[in-house]
Image (cartoon, rainbow, N blue to C red; front, side, top):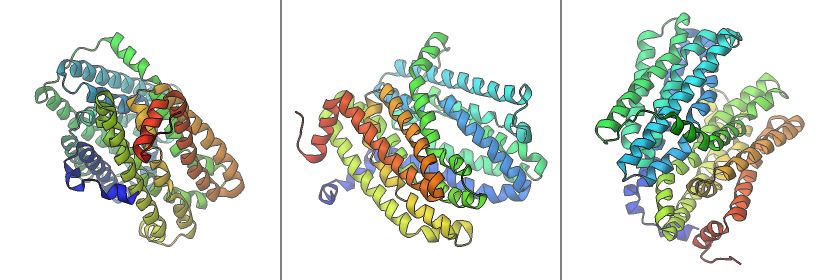
Length: 438
């Protein structure tokens, strides 16, 4: 493997659009994490721990509903844009349909919140905060990340994301000083994002010459129907990745929950690596699949080897520095949290195993197979988590999460082999230099 990697023309990598996409996606995620770390002590000092917890609880509800707002367009959008890059008329219709669909979903999600608050009297402790947080749904709806990703022009949107987070941070410093002002925190986050997104939409219209067409509801509903399986796949993945803590809460004490939560948060940041790689290579892979299959498979091979190397390096580094990382974040040495993190440290590498499978399912538009794989993974994760956590507590849950990454890799590999043998053997030939196609 090292010999193959050493033959890559690294001097040209920085000019590669997929590499640039990856770098700018990392900048976006890094700025989000950094601003979150900076804003956390400021908010706790201003509104208190109790209100800070309620603000984050409301944010968790919004994050779940943002899956509905996105409705799979973060997966289908870049592919369609990449294929239509040179056709501004088609891009205009595509852009108008997706933005209209996402705004419609944001309106539906907001309506669900309003019904829950004012009709069903849910979310009693943080109703006002949650209602004011609805602006975040429209911020998500108007974010054209998928468009710039498909156009492989990520520089502008990464800068815009950093600016919007700085705007949010400035809003906290200027306007959030009392616990009663907690309702404005998520509103400021949504407002800063929505304002910057509006400027991006103007840029797309005037500088990139993409026209905004009046939405045709027939086309909008057709688009939503086509993306239903991707939406359900995203929902299943969200449950699989983020549902572990809920399972653990049924079997463990609060202290163990806190230890696991710390390790899991670190792991979730590390697990962004394979997701960022997929997002970065997806547009170029879509074009290559349409135009040149040999180059497509060669591109996947290079990406896979580099991804496995990065994943392995990140996992090994995290394993050996787990104690230091926990001490830095918790200000004390928490042995149980360190043990959890050492086990979960291998999640990024195992998740990298499935990068190419997911990419091939996406570029070939196999929504049904992605749907099957996601829900099979979700069902396995829930069964394994309950079984192992009930017997071994937090360590059992860590093992369940590791095994879930292996299982989803096997599921996707089997699905691709059964449904598209040419794709399976094409990549095997590129990777190992020979084909075993019968």
